[in-house]
Image (cartoon, rainbow over all chains, first blue to last red; front, side, top):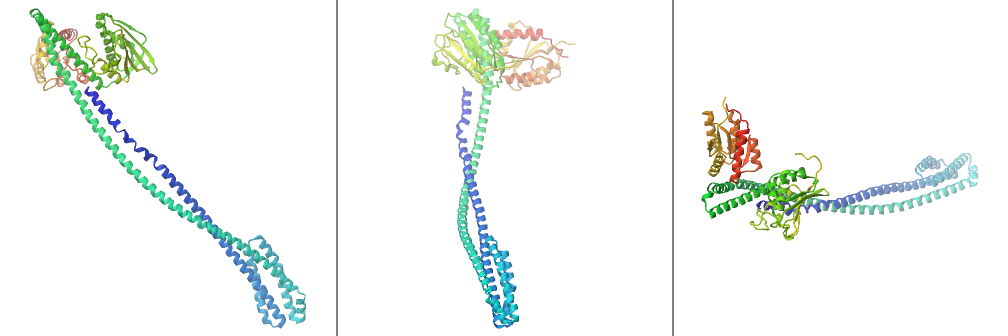
Length: 491
Length: 145
């Protein structure tokens, strides 16, 4: 029918645009590796920056150390010079007895301890500190010897010379020189090793800063790529959003069109039910009146024509009725609730009693039948059609024997309507559920060809299904399936 | 105290349906006179005239088609059910529509019964007999004063 065609259009709208959702996939997956790479690069950059900073700190430290070491060396050299200047002054005074020679001596004495204190505060190395400790008594001894000789020279040259000749001063001077040499050498070594370290560190710092620069470049590159990717993704998203809106608009328009078509179909059905039936009723009514009021005056053939008019009108009435039922079943709201199959079958059999009695049909119902989720009126329409078919499609002379039973199939309840009629060729099994599909001539088995289409549509609307197990000549076994229902069956 | 109406008002635009209905009433042997209105305006005018004039001409029951030219059956029904006195007259919808939207609307507007026109004349006869038996016999009508 027209309506099912419209439904196909409705079905193809979302289906045909399915690929619309696919472009989303890459854009969803995209940012993750980019972000990860960016994070790793940034982390590496940060690590190298921190380690570069540490290295530079160490380099500065070592540089300060090396500077201190050289200042210590200078200090020690100064101390050495001061000691020698003091001795030179003493010698000059002893030889000449002139006091002017004592001036450098006295200056030297003043400076000596100042220099020594400077050294003591600068030196950190334990071995060097020990050397300074050894140096202090030697210097004290030397200063005492110098002071002694200078004092003796005040009394006379000989006495002073005698002390000088003891070589005590000379020995002290040699010892001092030895310690000073030792100290200087050790300090030199410290300086050399530290310089080596400083050089190494400077090299490493240079390497790390090179690496940092490379990483910075890499981060910039990755960042730029990432941003470009983000922008591309944003563009893609915008395009997708636009596409979706477009699609929604299309669906809206299509829905609007379909609603319009449905309204027109409603109007069409309404027109059929009123306008088409009115002349039909007149045809039927007047033919009836003719037969009832003037039958005796009509010749045999006239009576036959009248009855043919009535039969044709009846067929057309049934056809319109079935088309309207089918269309109503497609359009109207169908809400399911628990329905007792026992009661539905009982009502349908009561309704079909005239036909059953007319044919002498034997109906056997296998109790209990159970409860299903259905729409009572739609379910009765289905059962009515199935029972009517079972009674109707009989070989001439046969008595219909109909069996109604149900079985539980998981969450479904399957109701069987089985007969001993003419059956259905398996090749027609599916087609009999299509509207207007007839297997037999109207003369043999009257009907509109819509009954089973109504059955299928009704079941579809109730969320169920139907089918047939049949073989030609061995009866038909129609079945319907609806979801089993638990709970109150309200009337 | 005056009794209810004494006629049957049939609001029907189709001459064939009027004709066949009249025949069915005749065949059923119903003596109460039938009055016809062929559209909504005529129905309203007829009811107003009947109510304003002799009460004896008021209808005992109204058979109302829904699809009428001009003022529709629903509008006529609405008018009747808004009338202070005539709303007590039973209104039987007699139509060819089984559409649930029509059924709902008719009952919502206060229709007393809803019948679908039968195609066969013997079915029509049976229906007329039952209308007679129930609405003009069994059913207790209110007075129209």
